[in-house]
Length: 460
Image: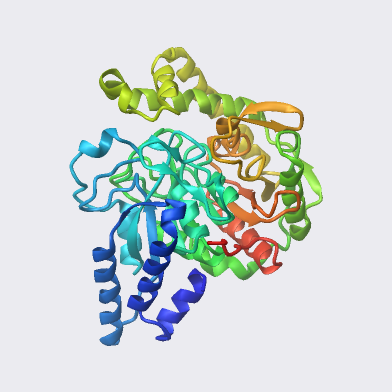
């Protein structure tokens, strides 16, 4: 059963929260030695939370909207009593978190049941979750392949059927890349939509938090539970809550839907192009749109990412560089050494870039593009060839996501299974103007209803 079906089963009394939890625990125990999605399991807490839901039912109380739904979080979210690792060795010496991150608090208030923390690229600097300290997270559809990153554990846990819902983070593509490679649903909300309080930062200027799920309904329900202003998070804009789950059945009649060409065509493999074309056909999108200056946006995002990331970890880089992830330590050091002029110029560029992107949405309501240039490469892959151009594999996984998140637009990554990938998925980005997550989710519902975008059971 997917998230929506599990919630109905608990709501109608067909299953108890305790029963749903124990099925999830059994699946984790049966598969995680192969997948390596979890770095910590919070089973005592989970059983207490499930028992509390069942006690409320026994008292005849109205259950909250996510009652009994098991979930797990990327290990950069604070979880009371756990050290917030953020995928690192350095953080192991930090004291345990005193309270949950705001989004964890909101899911608990909605009745969801926390089962653990998930693997990731160290300090979220990567697209592969080839974590040297905790081991790589493997793709449940082919254990030789990458899960993507930096929220690789979040994508793999859903794809493996361990939990129907996870929380991740997305700075340059870290929800959409693992959603694409693992074949699950992911939502990168508008920049500033959800509170980041209680999460370990990577790049404050660009970080987003959001959910991954096994169905578009599960994604929308989780997003609704996560919304709300947070006056203690200055980066969380005090916008009105806009419920999305109730809008899924509205369809797309009258919406102007385009397919991103140019850069998004040239940097996508034939299979990725096919996935986007299939989605466009179902959505009735025939016209091509051009994203303004995507390469410039990606370049500026790289500069800001490196500068803020390097600055954040400067003291530890000076004293404990040997304890950092070998795949990212050089990039952190290089970022710390970048001239301030580069950073300021990139931020000025971003303001102009956002204006140009927002102007694009005067002509379009929704845009379609591949989420990754290829399906999941094998773990350890160093180079990719995309349409005759050789790219370093790890940064290339963000070729198609970085320009979008740099503008702060909301995106749903929908799992599509095109030909030519050996049975592996490639996600499609459904992109809307800022604060229009509902349009992305409605388009996802259309793709799911048509049978194009969906999960497949992993062969574990």
